Each structure stands twice: as C-alpha cells, then as structure tokens.
Amino acid sequence: PKYEYIVVSRPEPSVVLVTLNRPKALNALSSPLFEELNEALEQADRDDSVGAMVLTGSEKAFAAGADIKEMKDKQFADAYKNKFLEDWGNLSRLRKPLIAAVSGFALGGGCELALMCDIILASPTAKFGQPEINLAVTPGGGGSQRLVHAIGKSRTMEMVLTGRMVSAQEASDWGMVSRVVGEGEAEVVKEAVKMAKGISEKSQIAVQACKEVVNAAHELNLAEGLRFERRIFHGLFATNDQKEGMAAFAEKRKPNFTHS
Ligand code: HXC
Image 1 (tube, helix red, strand yellow):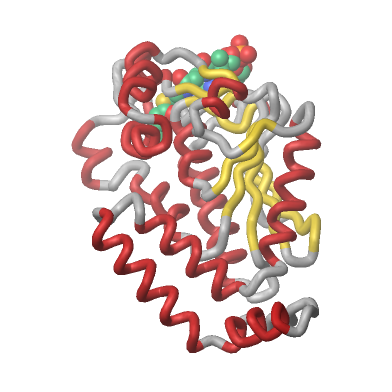
Image 2 (cartoon, rainbow, N blue to C red):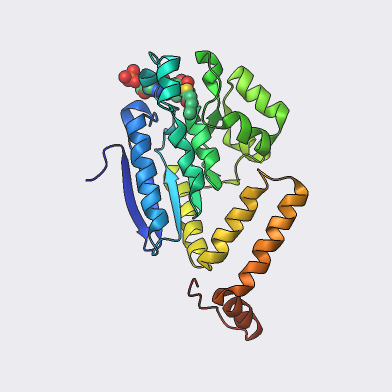
C-alpha cells in the first residue's frame, strides 16, 4: 500500500474514509503520519467523484496527540525555522466537508485534529482533552482558539489549565461535538459515512459555499460575515444547480444536480 500510518478506503463511491493506523502508539500524530494524512485528504479534495471525507482512528484512540517522543528533544530554533507542525493547518483549507468519527482518546493534537474537521460525531467512549499543560507546553494545533469558539472561555480554560479529559456526553452538552452516536467505533464510523454520503448527494457547489460561509463566522465580524454570506448567496443564482434545485421543488420531483 501507498501509506504506512493511515488506511484510505471508499466505503461508498462518493466517500473517502481515512483511518489513522498507528495502533501501538495510540495514533500519536508523528510528522510522517501527518504528511500522509494531508496527502490523502488533498487528493480526495481534488477528486471530482468524492463528495465528502470521514476521518477516524481506532476503538481505543482517535489520536492521543502529537508524537511526544518525536517532539521531546526539539529546540526552538529548529521548530521555528522548519515551521514545526505548521502543515497541520492545511487540513482546515479543504473545500469539501470532513467529518470526524471519534472513539476513545482524542487528546492534545488529537482533540485539535477533530476540531479542524467540519463536523464531529462521537462514540460514547470518546474522551477529549488538552493535556499539554502536563508536558509544560500550550496546545499548538489551534485548540486554544477553536475551543473558545466552540465551548467558550471558561470551559476552554478548565480544559487547557487542568488537562482534564471530558467525556463524550459532556463534550456534546458543551456543543463541542455534533452528537453522540452508537456504541463504539464501528457505529460512529457508519453514521459518519452515512452523513458523508448524504452530503455527497447535494450540489457540490452549494456544499462548498455553505462550508465557506460557516467558516467565515470564525474570521469575520458580524457585519462582514453577513455581507459575505449574502454575496455568496447571490452568486449561487449563477449556477445550474440552483435553477435545478428550485425547479425540482416547484415540480415536486427530486433534483438532478450536475455540480455546475
Ligand atoms: C507518543 C504515545 C502518545 C503520544 C501514547 N503513546 N500517546 N507516544 N506520543 N502522544 C504511546 C505510549 O508511549 C505507549 O507506547 C503506547 O502509546 C500506549 O500508551 P499507554 O500510555 O501505555 O496507554 P494507556 O495507559 O492506556 O494510556 C493512554 C493515554 C496515555 C492516557 C492516552 O497514553 C497518554 O497520556 N498519552 C499522552 C497524551 C498526551 O499528553 N497528548 C498530548 C501530546 S502534546 P509504549 O512504547 O510505551 O508501548 C500535543 C501537542 C499538540 O498533542 C501540538 C499540535 C500542533
């Protein structure tokens, strides 16, 4: 196979499933693993036959964080010059939806990886945490920022300052994940694939546009965000899919989108 640390499959013709596969290290996110992950997801993003992607780990661990053994002897100059972990952000630039199916530990970089995805589905066994404080560092993959948006300052401070693991139910109550589903890894993946397949059947132009406008809420103030949303909305009236979608509604039939 092409990859050593991940497994890439097609559970549905329109869905790419990426499974992190470093079981002995609880899917610790080493640099080579992340290179493979970026490559696989970027390839899926470019593939016209793919509508959405799902990212998962194992029953025991989605990912237990950045690879501590790889990091421990790093020096500032090397980390800074070589942009240590900066490529992680590539994942948040995908145009197509990426759904995280989380079972077991999602800690440190693993929690941040889930937060970079567009939707998080959690199995009841999922445990989220930012334990970097115990290693005498801060989160480094966006956790401190994305968590504040997701769950607010006080809860973020609690997670980041105490390192406490948060259960799936708590994460759901806090709005950090979309839902708790099923009983374990297999079921949460099944649900995520089903969701990805459903999204693939929509107009891919509209899906990309929806993802773009929602993400803008993290970056723009309200007035700018509202203007941005309206412009994108207006722009979609130039697409065939908008004509088809609205005509199909009026004619009481299923739309046949051409993604154009
Ligand atoms: C490297 C790791 C690892 C990690 C686990 N392992 N997490 N290796 N980096 N993050 C390895 C262990 O060393 C061990 O290898 C094997 O996986 C099994 O782990 P155990 O600890 O034996 O399992 P268990 O007792 O079940 O405990 C599970 C655990 C614990 C609670 C998840 O492994 C743990 O605390 N891991 C570290 C979590 C963490 O601090 N994450 C944040 C990392 S910092 P051996 O060879 O001994 O069998 C980070 C910064 C983000 O993520 C920056 C992003 C840009």
